[in-house]
Amino acid sequence: MLLNIKLFGVVKEKIGSDTLVFEASSQASLTVAELLEQLKRAYPVLGSLSSLAVAVNHTYASGEVALQAQDEIALIPPVSGG
Image (cartoon, rainbow, N blue to C red; front, side, top):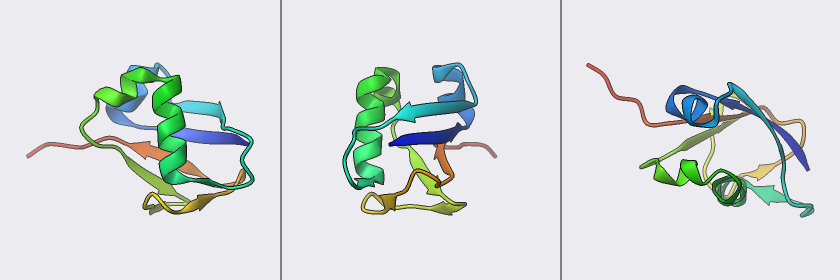
């Protein structure tokens, strides 16, 4: 499954791009949790983040949400500020 992923904040900096086209494993269905595991294997630098939120079609998604190739996916790192 070919996925288009938008990257924000420190994730964008670590990967070096604001978008990522990622070829996920050829499973019939892929969950957010499975995608994160595949991304961390492909990009070990992501494992250094304390947390990473995923939004699917403009809504924060839990790990069990199933993904489709046409979904808009975003990786959102922890944000701090004051």
